[in-house]
Length: 143
Image (cartoon, rainbow, N blue to C red; front, top):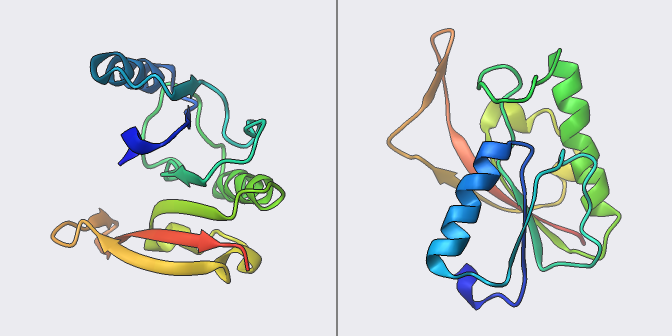
């Protein structure tokens, strides 16, 4: 579906992930794909785009080449900063894949903008301290 877009802006804090996306871009000759390697809380596209999309790290549960977050509160602040950045742009939609417990990190202002919730990985769950968590794809829309 992305191949039909006029412009795609990809941003990830992970340099190695960006290098992988560059290989996909080259292999499929996706000329309209622009790749950035920035912290999502600090990067805002210069122009309005059709949708923002992210699948954020889960606090300290995943290992990245960057240092990660020093606390769950820091992770929450980072996630809500990205939402605030989106909210203050001309882009109306935001797609988010996130585990159900991490969804609760969002400020109520943004939770109220959920337009659709789709369960993903229906046959797989994430285990943390013997508790099962599901992942969902949320679509937020400004009203």
